[in-house]
Image (cartoon, rainbow, N blue to C red):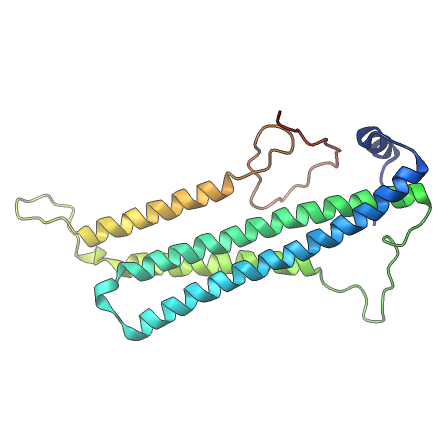
Length: 229
């Protein structure tokens, strides 16, 4: 791991409010425990969302197999729910990764202070450094989100006879309520996406809307959590 700049290290000890060796030793042990807890939560959340997606896909499979023409909009609703579940899994994984890396940085600085570099030391085998577990799972969440988006769009197209709709307004024209309902489901799915995306962290006081994909990394900084009165 890269060394922490001295300026950040000084800010860190000022932020946690102590430089006492004994207290920092206890803090190092606590950081290890919390990191382990965050990793456990990461995989519990991942399993929860995978089970939800599996259940939705199973329901879709039964409906498509039965070819229930009286429930054309139900598969559209299910694919919308599957899309939102995949996006929620992606966002939750990113949030879990953020807190895991937070405690790893705590450990890095505290190990420097204690002169013990267990967390920084790694044995690299003959096969070299391997893939990132959380990174692989993160991209898998993105791929599933794209997969569900494709299913949702295709189901939206076939849920109503869009090719038969006419833009000409005639006295004999009849509202296609199936198309109206399909549009309503699409709008609700879009609102659901915005609601999930807007659940940014209030770590720095005001709620922040995270970037979906970070092409340019930001500089490291230390923030003390804002506590509401």
